[in-house]
Image (tube, rainbow, N blue to C red; front, side, top):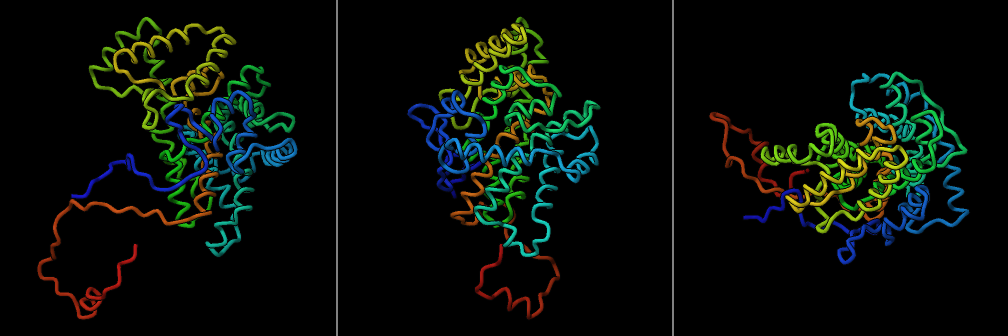
Length: 394
């Protein structure tokens, strides 16, 4: 019997230089740098450059990246029209998926040879930057549209995070909010061969284009076992209501064997290394907005769940209430994840293309033995084809 690794658990399928979790320090490393150090010292633009190029930028390189990013921030008419065709009741991830598909169709329009659409490394770096630049407008407009508010044009005097908040809320965010939002973007930017990244690499391995790979990754990220978890955390907080309700609520949830989102991780065994940085950012927001009730609920649920189950929070646990305090709708949380993770996805897509092998695993068949339709008699050509030694395609 074949040893089946359900979910590819424990299976190493390829090499990567983009990121890893260092088991000795329990640190997530981007190109060798601990993510908590990057979040404490770098802009999101600098981290994006690092993921794409392997090194942190010097002043001139960072200035050039910012110039290109700011030139492509505006929501184009075709993308806006595509979003407007969707009902406002559609999930925001469907808006983002549709928008990326339209952006990709526009960027590759006129390329009749599918091999040419794959793009060179330089072309795909440019595509990565342009897509990253446009996603804040997509996400911000989606939230505003659902609220019945008008589109806000980007500003080229604000950095990536500050402009993102400006386009979403129509006012300049306080420095503490921009800082917390920047840290969240950096923490969400990359995480090795997770489900969405692996999806992107599978699609890229077929020599499909970068945009198709990102669309597939968005579909994977929409699932609540992956990107949708930070939405679920807010639903849990809303359901519990306040810190004093945590005990009875948790009694019921555990008795019903409910999965408590925001806790546990497939990779980290001693707690998610990103949590302390995001929790510190959440604490600044709690103080800024004077919301000790949020901190009390957070601490009560964490302490009681860890005490009872020995399972620690992951990044989604502090990021959910942080985004809520900033003013983002709960349905917008996973699209925010997209806006950050597109940097990691595109870094992996380019890495896959640079040393490509089609990702095509095997399966263990457990269905019916070979059987035949009663009365069926194949013709001679079919019998001859069946006896040929060539392997079937696919």
